[in-house]
Length: 221
Image 1: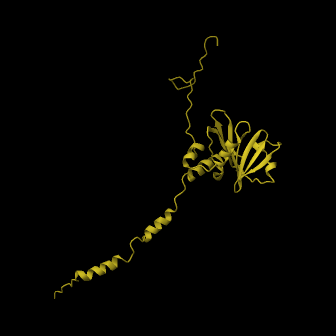
Image 2: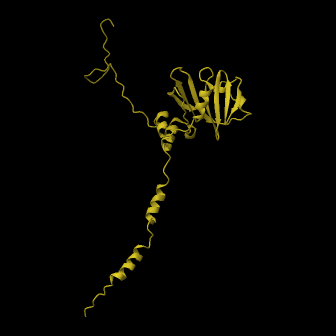
Image 3: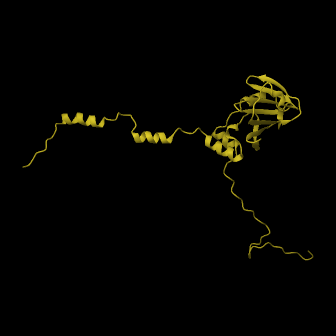
């Protein structure tokens, strides 16, 4: 006996299809999508990874790397280096006056009690005067002046010769000190990748034979 399949009317099928397809709300991510999003994690801050790799290659703690700016001053790239154990220092040069503006960041603290005991510009044995200026200390001694900004566990210092850089320029440079972004990191810190070795060409090697040095001695030599 041949059985005929029963065909449900379209009006009955439609609600069933809607129910089956709507078991997950529109816009709700699937479990696989949620897992992928969780695995990806938050995006890294711009320049963080590059800053860390470049600083660590120099022996500097990444959190101690700062940069500043002052009108007419240009970074002296060769001055960028390590200060103390893992601190950071760099110097900017005035284009017209050749005055030097030094940025130094190192671990430690500075208070009303310890400020006079800390020499300005690493000149030990010199008298230091301290003046509170907002959240910073304005310090003078040994022909130099400095703005010191206490941070959590370290101090940011911007210093110069008293006769070379006016106080207002020094203060502005100190307040402009900040952690570098990606572009500033590129300009401030050398690459963490070692420079490719450049072969040395010797001028005493002849272009023929086995390439042994030419030790020929002239007559009378």
